[in-house]
Length: 493
Image (tube, one colour):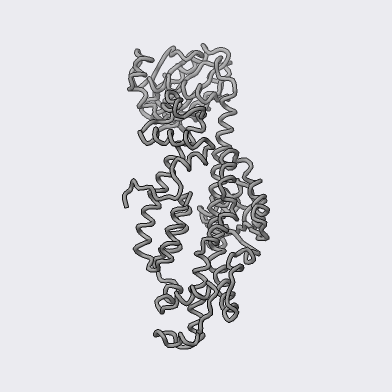
């Protein structure tokens, strides 16, 4: 199968049109532009003829969907090629391919491949080797089979109890692979296109979505999230260095709540605790048996008890674990997205604050052998630069003298920006000592730490040469770069 072949049952422009809520014709033109290698910025600025009234946010989402859909299509193509070589049954091949082509997320592909591509032989696989699959399918389709005729038909089928036991294994697996069963799991999570679009538009109503998912399905199922100390943590004593971690996660050592009442931060906290080996959290599902589509099958009267036994096994051994995995994955994805959105909102509030226009700035690029410093005016111009050394956790005499002099020329206040690279902690300590001992005089002095990402690269760019032509590259990063970091984030200390 060619890597460029489209195998999903929905075209690329249809996926984008549904995701972004735009006309199909516009989605088709946007797909052509993206296929030609055009970026979002170009399309938004110069191709209004193609994208119409699409906003920048819609174009970004369309581009994200474009890339995710192409990656999904590639994964589905590989999964189809892989599974068709492993699945011997023609019916199961068709069912697996249909499920893969209808996938809308990578998680859907993983779920289906896990169903059919197990590396070890299951009980159902061993039962199939005994020639019982066709019999099991006939029973599920409402047929009646004389089970006694199957005794001794293959080696291992020594009595009718053994025949029925193996038929139960196959039916249990077939029930779990039914398309209706897979759809039920998706509906339990509210994973429909409408709810997905709502999730994209406003992550803060995710809790409301979870409250709705019972009424959405008219379901009686109850799902709980429980958390407790891990078996390893239960063995820790006060002499173990990890013992103190238990205190950090004390709110979750006896945690049990309905999923509707679980907050995003709690999911992230439990997951962190599990990563550290302190906690173990899981999803508990109750009263789900009545929802299983196997309950609605019409079965021949002689086999009702047999199928009920298979259904019970399928629910407890296959169906509930599938729901648990899916709900856990959904909760984590929701919580991570909510955390990103919260961070974005907080950054937005920082952007809305007034800048540091009245402060002089001392920018320090830390280093053990040489600490580069620049004294900046409130408008960003570089007034003076210097280099001095750290002596242990304090500046040398030259450095202390220069910093005091710069502070004397700073009105009404002084902000010291320290890079987060090598010797940053020692530099922060030296500055805090000078502030504590009043070495800066009457100046209102505060300090902060700013990221150095890209500072060295900036210092040798043509832009840096044009902006700071009189400074060597080692001092450019300590001057203009730190000012840009501060102005960009508008930190107020």
